Figure 1 (cartoon, rainbow, N blue to C red):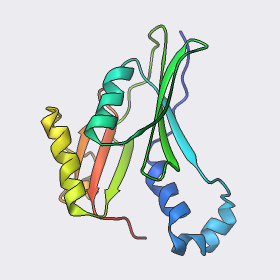
Figure 2 (figure 1 turned 180 degrees about the horizontal axis):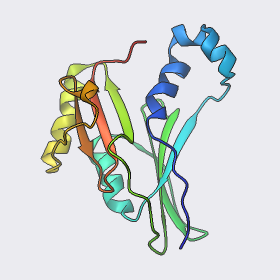
Figure 3 (figure 1 turned 90 degrees about the horizontal axis):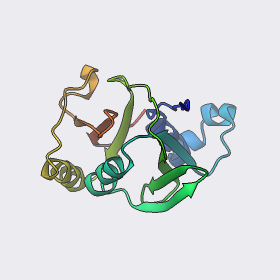
Figure 4 (figure 1 turned 90 degrees about the vertical axis):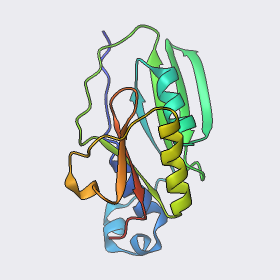
Amino acid sequence: MKKSTFICLTLIPLLSAMVNNPVYAQSSTLTKAKIKAVQFRIARPTNNLKEVVRFYKEGLGLPEIGAFKGHQGYDGVMLGLPDSGHHLEFTQYADPVSLPAPTKENLLVLYYDIPEQYEAANKRLQDMNIQTVAPENPYWEGKSKTYEDPDGWRVVLFNGIYTP
């Protein structure tokens, strides 16, 4: 069986804030980090490519920005935020592979600055019969909703934006 490497999805909101926020752009933290990348992608393997893509594409509304089939035994789909500077890539090997289970603290957090868009995303997921789950960390209670994708990875929809 193939081994897979995982990157914690909680990096997305942190890196997004650092790359896109002028306060961070001028801060010594960003300068010390020497982040020069203009895009980033989090890639994750799955044995349920079709269901996972449906969750993120139809449920969360992320547009598909690329896909491939049969690339050295892999199929994959890339989804992006509206500016396409932040990507999620899901890959599936031709033969099912053993994948480690996510913890309840492996989170992808999506921040919504427009309440109607936050509500629309929640409605799309609920219309797909995807129920909320209780967050492991009480920080998320009362200001967000947590869901699990078909592989059990958690996605938090946050009603507002992160401010340091």
